[in-house]
Image (cartoon, rainbow, N blue to C red; front, side):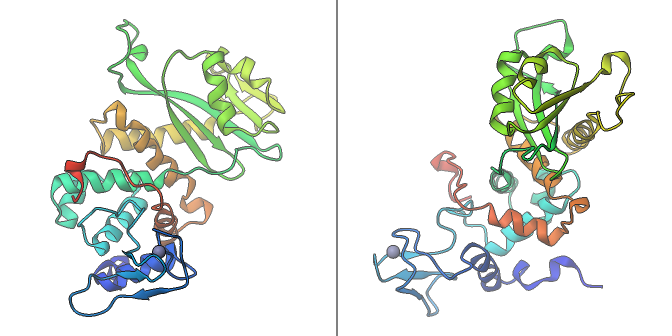
Length: 310
Ligand SMILES: [Zn+2]
């Protein structure tokens, strides 16, 4: 038996750079300063950094890290690749504490690495439900919302999440929802993610009624009446998105107990990413890690300067 982590790019810094370069520059190195691709030389010699190139068009040196989540990080590339493989392959996530212990980096570094990796997990993607596909939408509540006005209803004191699942592609897309659950506020959220020809599927909540008219079809199931699948049509249900919420909540409770509101969108990106690239959709651990790697570009976090270099 061969451990997945025994691959060379997880241990050898040169192999790690080659691995990343092959995926970020499939057609050869690109100068991040001037966009040049032609007059680029690999810098050699003992004193040169691994992965250093020089562009002879603008005369500036660069590495594949520039403009990615790896920029300004002193963590070796092979350690980054281990972290990405572990987070992409875990069922419910990996805590900073676990990462710190497994990788031998400080807890603070582990925390920054995981947030940067979550940034790479943020997926744009096309509108959902194109061509008339079914998209389930629902909301859930998690953790205490520090901005919520005090209320005796427990649910009103919690952070709100709205998720959409495209049944055809299996893709999940979630947002931290702020403000009142109303047609006026949920409408724009749906509009940003749904194709007009989609078939929207929700529960009977009032706030989906009016926005639902903007799509080719809108079906709803009456959870209030104890109905979980529409009696006349078994395809009308929101069980897929509810299944997603249960994975998300188990992960948040088990691994990321104390999630601040300002970071919740990053955790959602993580759960969306894993769900959208799950085994049932044909992705193995390597595929998932490679999709993640393709997302590192243009995602450099703008944390305070004091945190650069972690
Ligand atoms: Zn250049």
